[in-house]
Amino acid sequence: MMRAQNLTKTFNPGTPIENRALRGLDLDIPTGQFVTVIGSNGAGKSTFLNAISGDLAVDQGSIHIDDNDVTRQNAWQRAGLVARVFQDPMAGTCEGLSIEENLSLAWQRGARRGLRRAVTPALREEFRARLSTLKLGLESRLSDRMGLLSGGQRQAVSLLMASLKPSRILLLDEHTAALDPRTAAFVLELTDQIVADGKLTTLMVTHSMRQALDHGDRTVMLHQGRVVLDVSGEERARLDVPHLLAMFEQTRGETLDDDALLLG
Amino acid sequence: MSFISLMGALEIGLIFALVALGVLISFRILNFPDLTADGSFPLGGAVAATLIAGGHDPWMATGVAMVAGAGAGFVTGWLNVRLNILQLLASILVMIALYSINLRIMGAPNVPLIGEPTVFAPFLPADGDAGYWIQPLVLAVIVVIAKLALDAYFASQSGLAMRATGANPRMARSQGISTDRAVLTGMAISNALIALGGALYVQTQGGSDISMGIGTIVVGLAAVIIGETLIPSRSLWVATLAAVIGAILYRLFIALALTADFIGLQAQDLNLITAVLVGFALVLPAFKARLRKTLGGIGK
Ligand SMILES: Nc1ncnc2c1ncn2[C@@H]1O[C@H](COP(=O)(O)OP(=O)(O)O)[C@@H](O)[C@H]1O
Ligand SMILES: [Mg+2]
Image (tube, chains in turn yellow, blue):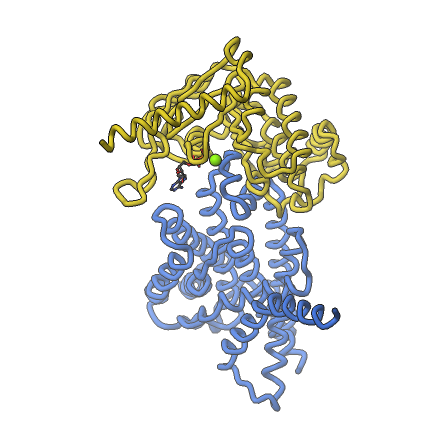
């Protein structure tokens, strides 16, 4: 369960470039639900995910993960609860470290790190088994540097790393956006599989309305730092991309009207 | 060059191998440009010399010197991660502060150690002969131990967390690594090694001097860069080996340059030579790339 209440975040407050990225965002995600998030550029999607992960401290509001109030915790303190995959394939892994070292880092996510060996023969066997599920042949390249892999391979490994240890919420921020269509489809399929296998509570940002409706159990739309649309179940099943697009345009028009009113 | 001066160069090269290992940790692993070395190297020397001159056990004195160096590195790291002072600036502040602190510790611009016991004393023959090869040998053992200990540490969970912190801090935090703590630990280890170098240096040179730290960081960097150029590798145990070899080769090169009378170089030219060498090594990769491009252009 993840509960975000009345989140606000303003970048550069009190300056000409002030930017109210989150403006009282509320969202409740029950355990095991897979939520897709859409919204135009600058809607606040990444800011929202960064707030959940602790990369960003919010100005107001609270974030609960299960029974933990994590609002004031740093990213590294929350890491035991939150797993994530970044948009940039370079961002989620260390290119200078080997595949097995990257996996070892994820294997210890949120746990104490001591003086024990980071990669043991037993662990190596475990990693090999996990990597073989990707069907990319990476199980024979454990000691290869991460930097040698393609963007798609790195994103697949990032996903595997995020699911290596249990988490209470999985955050995916346009994690297929930097990939070519075929690789993106593969990584998306892998995402569905990993989420289903682990019954993971998931928040996936996507730039594609098609993806948003085809994956997960619920779709929310962010606009100007707030949730402006929230569909699930029957309603969502009936929804089609043109419908969603129409609703998208409508909310945009409404906010434009609001602004016009304010200006008037 | 005589055998004795060769051994002397080897001795200082081994001492600077410890400095190079420290520089490798800050500059390469943590990605933290740290100039504290110019203060923590003489700090190690000041602490060790003062304690030994005061009648304390040389090994104990060397250990305390390392702790002092760790403290200096910790403060530099702390200024950066807690007070958000730029890395380079934080280290310069500590380096400058250490100049005063080192003077306070020694109580004078220098502390002679003539006739005092050193960590080498138990290994030296009673008649004082043959010392010229025993000191480098003891130093070599210390350097090998330091290198292997570092290799083991960086293969551990904690050491891997430190490498991730330097390589990709955001990713490290998302894996639950306290990057602040990793930086503080790494900076402490780095400067403890550099202070160990300083403590051993005063015991081979017969005393400590307030100006002995000038240029330490540049020599350490030179060693790391020479090592990387000669033995390029992504693997960490090779990188530590390269730093050690780089330091030794660098000192041998300097000794050769100084003994070759026809060049006309003198000891005071050392820092200039080092700076030119490091500057050259820093622009070399870019120059090589440009040269390759130009040659490629001609080929077409
Ligand atoms: N670190 C930052 N500093 C200043 N402005 C930012 C920062 N991060 C995001 N913003 C701004 O906040 C708004 C929301 O950004 P973001 O959450 O990245 O949007 P998106 O929905 O496209 O992911 C945008 O207008 C963006 O320019
Ligand atoms: Mg975004």
